[in-house]
Length: 325
Image (cartoon, rainbow, N blue to C red; front, top):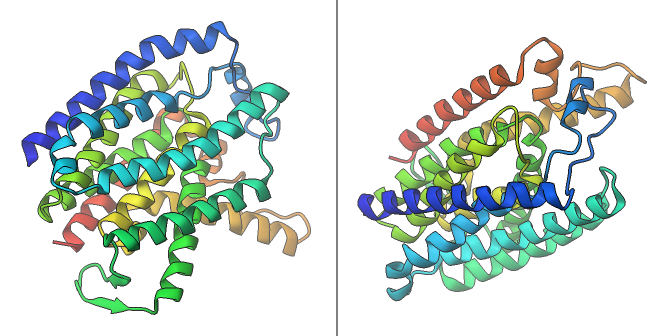
């Protein structure tokens, strides 16, 4: 199984890298560039006009790999990897709509927050119901380290799952604020899922996890600082979908507390900043939110932010692998 999943990683890396060789010049040619927020760090204005929708690169790599390398699992009736990628494509489509509107309006506002939330919530509920119907989720919560399970009523589980999925997707999207950051942070997450899936003899999830890890590795060839292309909401929402849907397909969503520690910290920093700002009528805890911007304002360059955040993710993902051994 390790050989098959390693092939998946290599195939996805190759397909994504090849897709990038065509996509980057194409997006430049049609002037599909990012509009930078004026309330962000001033030095980010130099990124104005960088092509977006680069997520299409690793999305292509994942689709090709899961259909080709994952065909054995499909023939055996295990469709978890197909469902993971398929569900993530729904979130990617929401992101694509957002990116398209940004390009059309030539500003950094696409879909409204309420539109994105309602679309994501509807998608999350449908996805959980389908996973349940297919028998891939039990409705029990596996507790890391203790390996005990807690059974919760199905209605409660559905609400919990919808909250976790929507929250995770947006947390991953929020982390995408520095060149290569969300890709670097997410590679250890997918590698952890890969190891867990192989241990559990789940070839399909191992293939999709390895495929995304390889795709993100290839994407970093184009997205590492200074970025030649951004993944856009197309890529970050698809990535968020893969991160949370894989955890649910493995039937262990609580593993996200460890694997998603960076996403959680980024989101909490944003929430804390807003609440404190309103409560104190203008005071701030962080120099800028989310967290990666705070450290930028403290003098960290993008290389340091990328390195430290990726290392933190790697350490907690290693703990997650141990926690479910």
